[in-house]
Image (cartoon, rainbow, N blue to C red; front, side, top):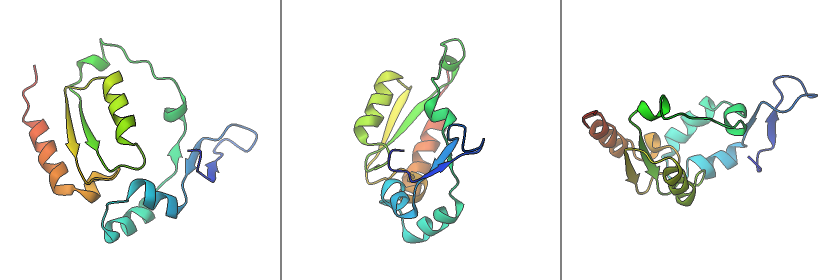
Length: 130
């Protein structure tokens, strides 16, 4: 976010920003560093501003509700938006039921490694829920 030059003021300039958007060159390096060019072209015309509320507000999760969902984490090992260290910290602080790692994937494995992501999602779907 520090590198974003495009802050969005959905509630007016006198209020705090509500979202942000990276420049196209930044998005390519952050999100799509391993993705095919044709997929990047499609993604670029589909990108929308990222809302700041979910990023900036403190999230409070309870075991009674959040803890009842079966969660898995797909770690993208060549991600420039969320480094592997940051992803590992997220996993440590809120352990999921399993971690699946995709080597050679950027932030968007549905573009950079779609077959492997599909295989992982099918595997997750077949895991029995307790």
